[in-house]
Length: 174
Image (cartoon, rainbow, N blue to C red; front, side, top):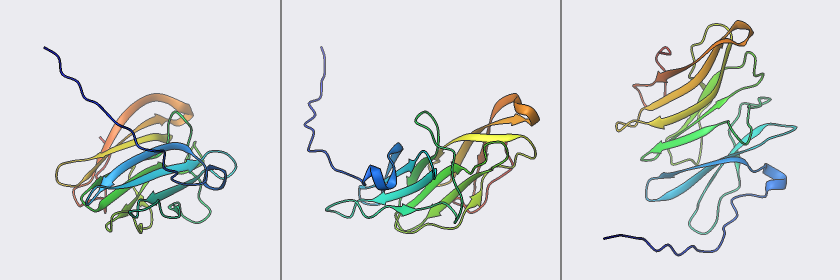
């Protein structure tokens, strides 16, 4: 006995002009009533980060989510992440420079139309915190994991920082 599914793919839908906004490491989540929100970046000169939300007919103009003058560590194999619970969307990223920038999140409570200022997620005192990833627990609280190294890139390990207030603050890394 075997089971199978038949998928019928629709036409390709452009999220954003890659030449203008970049197209590195796209990540998507679904908010509210099945609305996709896509996170992607511009790897290169600006290392910028954008979110674009489906409006029912097309994707909205990408919204930059980094603080003014900030840049993120982004590559095809690692970089920012996004997840949601209901209409709350959390994006996590590593601010440059790699050697001493921190892990931050931004939070939206309107389905990805607007985002908060940065909220620091890591509590690593010295050394390097990078390569963040995240998910939301069943109560809508973000759980962020990232790699840390002590000074001079020694003693690598993964740690977790969770939030118990919907991403407004983060507990010390474990």
